[in-house]
Image (cartoon, rainbow, N blue to C red):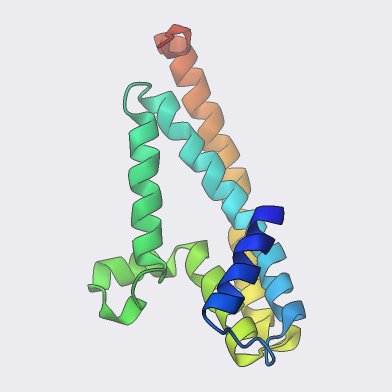
Length: 152
């Protein structure tokens, strides 16, 4: 948190950022709601090393790059091919980024962010139980195949 604050302060001075129209309550509401689907996504990503101990970590890094690409971090979704736009629509990062951007840059308040918050909470309600189920399956599989006994 302290590191983020330092980066924020330095960036604000270097780039002359103007947050006078920012709505912090709206941004915090979206941020809090986004934690649930991101927890589910993190649990799903943790399955990859269980499925392939040798390449699981690299697969999780590749998945991270893909999610950043289709979630509007690098480019607007509209310039991406349709299959990537569909993947972006399924990514909670897309909604989190759009909601936080609209609150900080356009002053969207908590009331305006309610649809985004509802989408994120719904994704979290689906993703956490599903990811826990998938993780349990992957753990049982890894134990059965002896994949957890390997070291290095």
